[in-house]
Image (tube, rainbow, N blue to C red):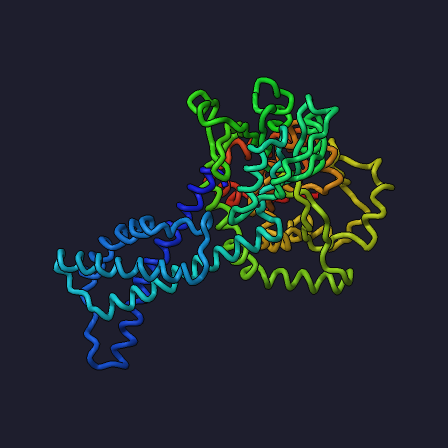
Length: 480
């Protein structure tokens, strides 16, 4: 895991801990009030000013103790349930002593039962938070949704073997796609070291790198000796740059002082990394954390609308309700995208006959008055109601609310060169293309808007796009 990703996950952990602590303060008051009705010896609640003042001092102290006990590194170093419980118990014991000292120093009058209720709440919420987050990350990792796919380049020496071994033993190990042998080994297929069972197979020479990046999803390319001199691999670096795939070069520790452009660490091995428009990992973590939450809220709020659409489809077109298609996701990962069905049955089989009527440039297929679209389907498309099932794609993690629109696999495979860098961000339901004219734009304009979104991405840009999407949908500009 890269240092920037590690930093982002740690900050996300601390932010969630702040939420848990604030929630525990409110829960403690509710528990105290309930205890008063059941137990006569429980004292009244303290003044709000005393409680708020103590909470104001306790919050930063609590965060310092979380870092001191290394409890903000659950993702990098997951603990067994027993070890996590023990560490949380130690944290709360020290925190209780610290809160007592703060209370004594400030002379704040706070009931011991209130403190006990607060600490019990924080213990439960912090444990539940870590268990749920860690379980979700492992579940996504098992599905391959967030599992990093790494391609190695170089001679299978002990250095490469050590990296493969350490990566395989990581809490969330990457998938090693294989390794590409250097040019000097084209006539000599060396066998990996016998003591390296985690070494991936050789899948070709380094000259195959552009083809492999085009044909299968790869998140990161890591170069080892003798392929660890960037000046000798300009073509391979350009192939990585075109697709927005990060490229890292293994270096010896003695070379770190002269490494350029930036030194990173992957599974405790040093690399020099070239990355296109690097983004702050902590803000990306916030984006990906908010996506399923907002999608779940949207599904609940829009469920009556979706129910009406379902009934209309059943009444006018019959089953199936959904159109399911394989689309290209992050770095080309295939996933099943859902839409409400807007065409007659067997529409895909009729596509070839309509190819001469295609009105979009590039590999994308669009027909203005598509005879396959039903009257209800035309209404669903013009109002974008057919896109609503993609909220479930966002909920599952295969899509984001905002991001480049995913293309069918057959169309995405026809895109070449710099335009493929659109795959370096998770696809979304809406993006600059949707609010900029949709089908009224030329294909190259669409691709440029996607790259503009990637290069200028921020949480503020996502919010702006979401706020402008509804007026764009209501105006029906470019909808077909």
